[in-house]
Image 1: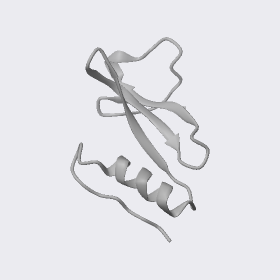
Image 2: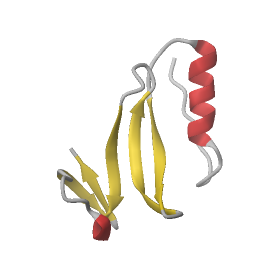
Image 3: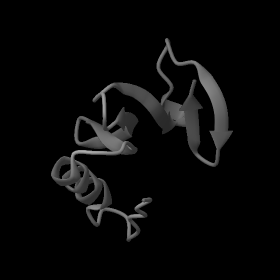
Length: 81
């Protein structure tokens, strides 16, 4: 079974998916977690639900850290490998 969680920005989609995963206790998927630095959105980390592994995923192009491994650019975002 595949679940699509859709909605507006900041409407709780990732929280909904995480809750669904914890209730069903099966399957797998990914959520993006917002990262804030000094109350400003720095970027996103991607988290695999089954392992809880997290990695940097995307940040603003004008905010790239030194150890960033850029793989793709889209609009204002840089995506890491």
